[in-house]
Length: 252
View (cartoon, rainbow, N blue to C red):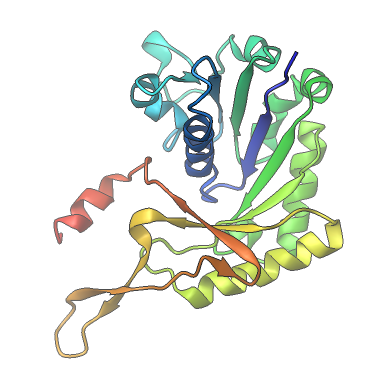
């Protein structure tokens, strides 16, 4: 029997791991669309951050044939550390391609440890999404410490590093390049796969203040190359929009 992939996505708070997990599940479904009977499950295991969660795309993904596993009914949007009772069954269903969106600190990974034996038996990848512009993964030692804590708590090992270094609309090519350099050092010393960097689709512009005005913001297109320092660019669709994005787009 064919065993479809199980991919775990972890990362510190603010790393963008949920956005990456959502995109990964959708792209996998689309790239295998010839398999009409393929089942894809995106599992929301994030009990740390109740604000930006993969469960928020449940209705949208259902239309595309992607199951989002998360608390249902009255608890679907509850700001509570809850997990769906369906998780164990999904992990043990080898006919499904499974993507686990896991909370971004040791407390979040503790829930993953409950299923570590089943996950090891099935086989897995664990992607560590890193934004070096966030407090707990800002340099080599921070990343190593975070990785060690997450692995120890989850009882599972990171298999791949993902660069998502950004400052949202204030991201520059230089910021991303510095992030790649830092993460590459970790990859070299830990002997881990690191071959891609992420860019949010509608954040590929650099916002600057006009020189001849008082505070007006203008957009300058940034040329994020397809390959940067040997890393392939992966453009993410923007799903988890923040409340202030609407205000910004209206010029408020």
